[in-house]
Length: 86
Image 1: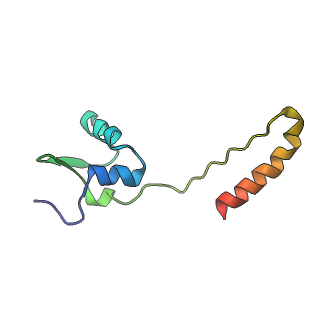
Image 2: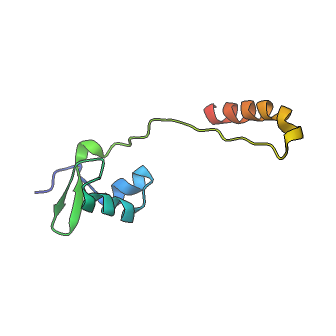
Image 3: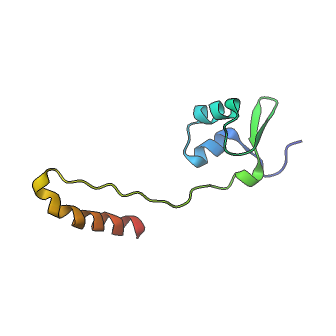
């Protein structure tokens, strides 16, 4: 019996930003971070685990072309941070 709301491994991997082959390997090795089970040829992920797990963390990477431009780095970081959080 397939429960309403159950998603396949392929849909879960796409939503999480993980390649399907990687998610399948995790499933085979028992390392998938969500409960899943095999039903025939399908791999179904637990409905409670189908919600995105992204925590909203944003990383800002900024650099300058040379050491003499190092003073511009703080301004660049401030602009990129403002854009990323806006």
